[in-house]
Length: 122
Image (cartoon, rainbow, N blue to C red; front, top):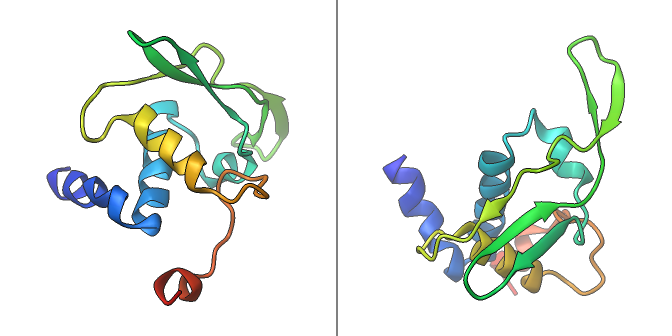
């Protein structure tokens, strides 16, 4: 966990690490059941709420998931779950706000595909 935290703390210096850190924050805080969840998230799926004393994020979208038998269902498994700001270096609210801000204004999905060559060799 220490190695993971050390790596993720570099998110302000690299868009690739910022993307990985945002994915990690969502996976850990919303405890999702696999990759299909992340592919459904839109740029506006996260609602940033609160005031100067307490900031948090909620998920505002229904998610389609399959159960163990392969049957699809629509639901909001995150209903009532929140990600709270911590004020620390790896503050999940700060990370997700930065991640959304750095995305293209034309982006619709939260985790768009990207070309490593464009990022690594601008």
